[in-house]
Amino acid sequence: MCLGAGCAFAMNAELRNASAISTNAVEPAGSATAIPAEHGPSQKAVEIARPFGFPVTNSMVATWIVALGLIVFAQVATRRMKPVPEGAQNFWEWLVEGLYTFLEGIIGSHLVGRTFWFFASIFIFILFANWVSLIPGVGTIGWGHHTAHGLEIDQPLFRGANADVNLTLAMALVFFACWIIWALQEDGLVGFLKELFGPKGDTAGLLGVIMVIVFFASGCLEIISILFRPVSLSFRLYGNVFAGENMLETMSTLVPHLGWLLPIPFYFLELLVGLVQALVFMLLTAVFTLLICQHEEEEPATSRS
Image (tube, rainbow, N blue to C red):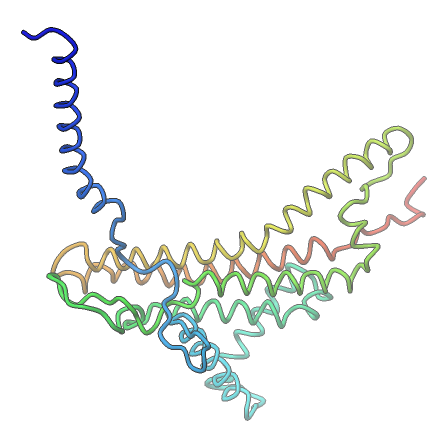
């Protein structure tokens, strides 16, 4: 037993030395696990070239391939139109006519004549971009390094076009610009503001004043909702496509020696998801356009007694 300040000082010094040793022993392990290694597809597109200082990513390459393929196919299908379509012309006419009839039943013949070029183009592009990303080689051909489990691809040459949030956000912003133009063409500036902030229905007196305040506040909330539409549209499409890529990657590495078999059922699921996501993007943009461009039908005076 020791008493006095000298003994207390010695005990404190020993405790400090022990804590310093334990801290030095823990820090390397903590620093090694602070930044976990990323597995699966990268969350962002990988730059694979920079010609003339312009960065080119693997998702841009896939986008250009899909766009060029659709342009060439459309040109071939419509180069020599026949009264009785066959082959590529038959498929292209079936696709375009089916989309036109489908959209006409949703937004009406007037709006579909003005906006069909955008909705059809966005649906066809998203659909085939989603399906092309399922072709074997997309995400698995590129540059990498050897590991204990084989070759690991660090820089894939191709990446699903819609698995890049830059593309989905660009499509959503293009729609937002078109939406404003169509709304101004249909309603005019005054009608556009009235559609957002104007009171609906026939009200008078104190109730009319209250309704003006309510609908003005509702219009302010609608403005916030409109500004967030490009974000929700882009991240909905990107999230579903990127999640599908991660699922296929997980299935291919889940069980050794069965990586070629397990993803096959999920490929069929992703074919359906690609169709659904293209349809959802087109329908949401069409409905947003309908909501701002539709007009309330005035009740005929003769129907009132």
